Amino acid sequence: MAISHPAQLSKEEDRVPRGPVTATLNFYAPSPDGAAPFNHVDTPPAGLSVRNFSDSPQQVQITDIRGSESDFTLDGDAFQVLSSVPTSPSVDFTSEDSITTHYYPEITSLLLSAIPGSTNVLIFDHTIRRTSPSSPRNPVQRVHIDQTPYSAAQRVKRHITSSSADRILSGVRYRIVNVWRPLNKTPVESFPLAFASSSSLDDKDIIPVEHRYASGYLGQTAAIQHNPDQKWYYLSGMTGDERLLLECFDSEALMDGSGVQGGRVAHTAFADPRSRPDAEGRESIEVRALVFGP
Image 1 (spheres, rainbow, N blue to C red):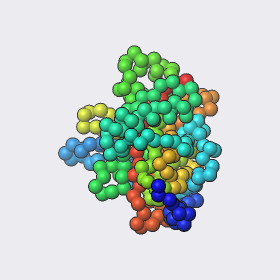
Image 2: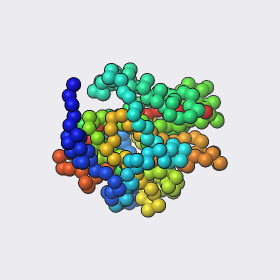
Image 3: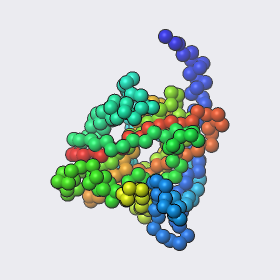
Image 4: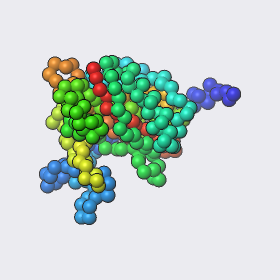
């Protein structure tokens, strides 16, 4: 058995950026012609750009929640941290089959135990991101929300039979929750994830973006305009036994008096200016799920 020396552990811990930081986040800048924003998920048709909007980089104060993770909840902030979560050694994160066969059941059990009253979980996809020029998916450095109320309802219709979908949309509570975790063997040093408390996000700053697929399917994500009232956070040095729940939609948030504060979390990867130039690139997986009940 290999023995880790305290000096080695201390050196590894010292290189992880900690505490509050001011960093650049890329917010929404509209098209000069005022056209409704769109984004092509696949190669766009000839003559069209990938997207018709651009970025507005802003310097933002981001608070480190390390040590105060339990202060934040899905109902209050639309994000939540779970610690000491085991992963089966059977999961091979380089194999799509292994992820769906072995990791998806772990995520289902995790969500059912972490979200009170939840009765059913339907995982509909996942994405692995690596900070490498050769990776097909890099960390996204643009402030966004993965779903809008429109696209959340479309997800239900797309993945649930018609009769059940109608029943759910007419009154059953449903959410879309991403389960995010790093895949690095050591604590994350570069391109951590920043997330804004849903309670600090003004509806007028959420801009629906039409998400166009080559198949003809139209979805929506949301871009975010900068507002100094937004409260931004990150979790320094995330490790492989921690999970970040990112709630992209909660139907309960549409109900007056529910107590749910918005139910949609804006998030983005960001370049931490304190990261070492040779810091290990961040690797992560996010699993997206519909969560039903109570």
